[in-house]
Length: 344
Image 1 (cartoon, helix red, strand yellow):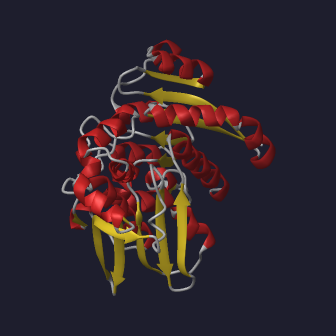
Image 2 (spheres, rainbow, N blue to C red):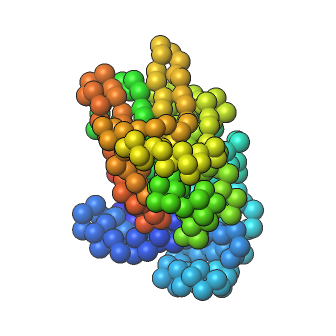
């Protein structure tokens, strides 16, 4: 039986969903994997932080977070407000990093993950920024420390994309990918197909927490471009930045255009694509009309799909239906289990 100390950097919807999942799966982790855990640190942006080397009551932390209370009351020692200082002060074996994404340079998440690895922690994140802007640095740093840097939840929540190639498709060479990777725009376009205006569909997405107050990251294609860049960087081993992805959002799609497409038996989708060309890659995010013969056609609402074409299996598609914080949390949990098992 192995016992691991866990730290959370960020304890919003995803962090709390992970906490709930860890509690629910506690007995399975012991029985199936010989893994025990306790939480030694939780840092939040607005609700305080806590460090306790002997263990924080995770159920109480979840109750406080849900009620909007401060986690400071759970701390056995002063918890630094600076993120890197918090990590340096927190005794842990695994860091779960779940801070907001920075499309431009991946900071401060890269600094948090670097600090965790340098303190001999496995670094697990759902953040796309560090994958795009720090993949090689963090992966090589982790290898030198005998640790793992994993990020399954960075694209398509908990669907096994990165681990699919890492663990189950040895020697497969990815030639291209194509899919719908931004659930917000997929939902907006589906509701426009049902008769709503663009603004009404965006407002609905915001009301259910799918879209941010400023939805430009989704509707202008930035989120999709970052996901394409992450997949290419890792799975094709070709560094690609979001700004290098040809990008067009969905602002120009009118209700009339959606109606005309529907009458033709077609739908608009914000399609992500990347094609290997020698040692380079051509990548694009843009609206496309797809017909019923396309696997993208039936992926509605907040669901996502990606089709990989490799040199060994032809086309292989993965679909994720209606993801949420709970599916993102599962990707983090899977990374934790795989990291500690593979590092033995």
